[in-house]
Image (cartoon, rainbow, N blue to C red):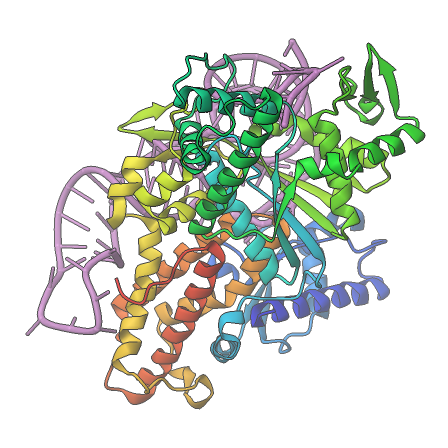
Amino acid sequence: MGVLERIKSRICQDLREAAQEAKSQGKIEYDELPSFVLEVPREKVHGDFATNLAMILAKKAGQPPRKIAETIVQFFPVGKNWVRKVEVAGPGFINFFLEPSWLYQVLPEVEEEGENYGCSQIGKGKKVQVEFVSANPTGLLHMGNARGAALGDTLANILAAAGYDVTREFYVNDAGNQIEVFGRSLEARYLQLLGQDVPFPEDGYPGEDLVECMRNLINEVGDKYLKVDPQLRREHLIRYALKEKLQQMEKDLADFGVIYDVWFSEQSLHDSGAIEEVLKELKEKGYLYEKDGALWFRASLFGEEKDEVLVRSNGVPTYFAADIAYHKNKFDRGFDQVINIWGADHHGHVSRLKGALKALGYDPNRLQIIIMQLVRLFRGGELVRMSKRSGEYITLRDLVEEVGRDAARFFFVMRSADSHLDFDMDLAKKQSEENPVYYVQYAHARICSILRQVKGELPRAGEVPLEALQEPAELELIRKIADYPGEVIFAATHLEPHRLAHYAYELATLFHGFYTTCRVLTDDPDLRRARLVLVNATRITLRNVLSLLGVSAPERM
RNA sequence: GUCCCGGUAGCUCAACAGGAUAGAGCAACGGACUUCUAAUCCGUUGGUUGGGGGUUCGAGUCCCUCCCGGGACGCCA
């Protein structure tokens, strides 16, 4: 936890005590102190922190907000915790002004913590699982998957930095109807490649990647499966293709900077009896019934519009049934919190899955689902329609090759998950000069360039008179660096990775401004040393935030 | 038809669970390189936060209603 966070929590505590004291002296009345915010005001003239406490209390206390604020201020200890001045302003805000010198303790802290600067323990080691992408292995990874990958991986990084014990997981949909279709598609390609005139299934997966896959198989084993029983043949083809496609996905994701801890097979839930087990449990609790030969879950008991089929009349469990078993399995594995990143086309499943977990006796709040809006791809100013049906779309691999991993990841993470994302390929490619990711990286490269020139001369923060830093550009930069640990905590608790992309940009902006007005390698020895400490702290912070975003921090550009 | 997510500057997006004068980037226009990297900086232009009601000290944010865009409503996943 950073300096700023510590000061902030102490001021909060003093505020609570001041209010309590005012209450016990009969100056204001309330039962429970309501929750209030101590925030950094947008306007600098409003101080370093401001609280709405008095305005929140106004209703209960039956006094005008400003009057309450005045009262609380009387009991607030000025002179402690760097608080220099407290004032009442506007409709009843209490503004806090800090001794400017508080800033100087930030730099030694950054230097000391190094790559851990920004990390905290608010997660208290709680086990969290982030499940993301989980794309069907029947095709290639598309732009939506890429967005999910960038978001999920960054979120996992952020949670780990905030002190959670994070597991990244990919749920492999290797069971169900689609696998049947997959098998028939593969079979048709296989036979076609061997010269047979067989039709391609109407509902099959037409992608060229399946042809490629079967070509590889033929190179290995030839027409070995030509005369095999079709059922058995499809099983072989599926096994081969699944393995190849998963390896490809794993590699493509790794090239995008995403490494999973667990690849979890849906089929394993069928094989292990986990689905049967969960069905049995729901049945015992009386939440299942039979109708039209199928087995239904009483989702309507849990706020759903209608009930849901768990086992089809042909005896095969639905995807939903597997998903219930899967999430039970997650909790059984000891995760305190489970986070799923789903595309908007799955939002309808959220409440019914939570309902099923409730039926099983789990607290549904332990499952958080981030619904990510879909990505629209533009090329040449035209919307590119993407679908597996047409077999024509931009893959994650194409994306990394065309625009690069850094730019792609930064772009995806810049936007909040619930906003639609227009991705202009042409812009992303040719934009190398205006691209925000280069702007941030350039700040880092500039710092490294300075440090290269003073090789060995980089002083320790503790040995330098940091008070030499007095320029507004210097103080604002330090202030921004001080914000970093709080930003990580905020992004982690709100599950909002995009905030860190914005933070990175703002930090780079302040650095570039500083660079323009303040020369680091100046003749004044004290100032020079102090500025070296400052740019080094900036470098560390930039590198740390970029690392959370999965973006490289180049030393030269 | 029901439900979910959006609608903020010409464009792409922010706005820290209701806070003080709604902010950035791009685009447009005008400036700054014999000086640590100009992939940079400075300045100007740009808004009835989709419309209309309501809640309160205070609304882009919450409630109601309508309009527009996207998505979901299957014994598919």
